[in-house]
Length: 140
Image (cartoon, rainbow, N blue to C red; front, side, top):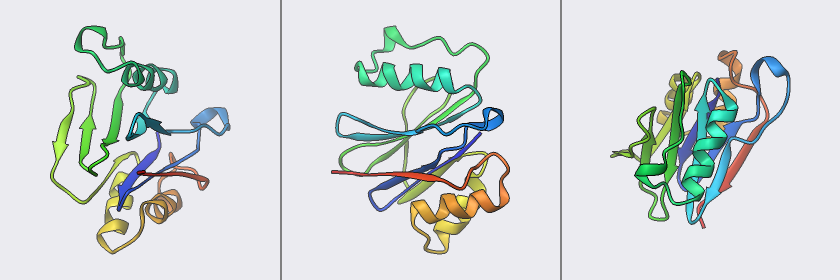
């Protein structure tokens, strides 16, 4: 999987592509929002990002099949939303959050004051699904 973390206007994610030994981008700017993707099928995650870029209309949700998705969206006001397989935005009432296989490590690091990027780096030390290279995007 991966680790995606958000805190203080910054979204960060590792670049690990699992068994393929490749590097991919998992954080995106969609309009004035930040989107970070975690799941078990990267192609499915890209379908969800495309759906969001096209307006996220209810009647055009992508087919996920058996894939599992966990997506963070942060709007221009810094409000955090979690999307799971139903692709329905769940508002979170927190200042920071993380998703993915390393989320517990990242949440613990941020609870102790770590930035989103440092939280992903901490997760990469303990979670085999999280790689050490990190991408970051900042709210504008």
